[in-house]
Image 1: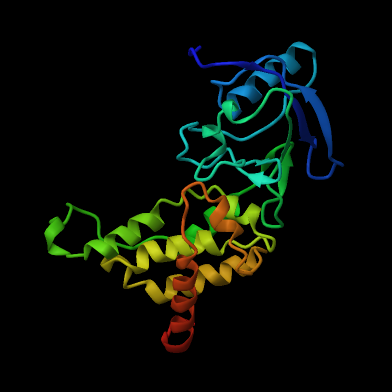
Image 2: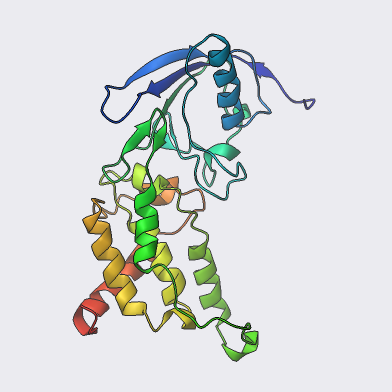
Amino acid sequence: MSNTSKIINLTLKIWRQENPASVGAFKNYPSGPISTDMSFLEMLDVVNEALTQQGEEPVAFDHDCREGICGACGTVINGQAHGHLEGTTLCQLHMRNFKDGDTIVIEPFRSRAFPLIKDLMVDRSALDTLVAEGGYVSVNTGGAIEANSILVPQRTADQALDASECIGCGACVAACPNGSAMLFVSAKVSQLALLPQGQPERAKRALAMVRKMDELGFGNCGNERECEAACPKQISITNIARLNREYLKASLFSREK
């Protein structure tokens, strides 16, 4: 424990739901003594240990890397996906950002395209389906090509790399009033449309991913910018403008209908 660490006690208002068919409700739990050095997920671990010792079923929640790179830990904290800090995943949100005596409301992502599994866990596989629809490039296997054989301007490379930072956590969908996946899809489309390797399937990619997005029940963009505010990697909505251009151009001029 660091010299600046403090012990705080919180009231946790956690959404509990046994399965998709059951009726869910918020239930209050005391956090018990919590170190401000803990991450939010470590705090939930402590709460679950106490629940287990009391004979109560622990709270189900997703997690994996706990390093801010996988996006699996997506949960809504006090009405904000991943919590109130900008550019932060839930596992990187530390308890020092809360005060002793706070009440924290913890609930799952709410979206038609993300059906609930249990408690704080939702099925985000729709994002994987979108990637499978066109978020890739088809290339020949073999030895790596000499890097300087395909020249990319620095500004273009930077834009592509910025878009590629998307970790597919789904916070943009959860934050959007329409449950739109436009920021996620636009990041994938932009990442590949900007680079030479993505050109052969450029039109097909834009058409296929947008159509699949609609098919899966995601809403449309309403220019609310909630997605950009919630994104832990701070993906810009300028990518949505690029996606719209890519889709319009493909719809008008491409043979990929």
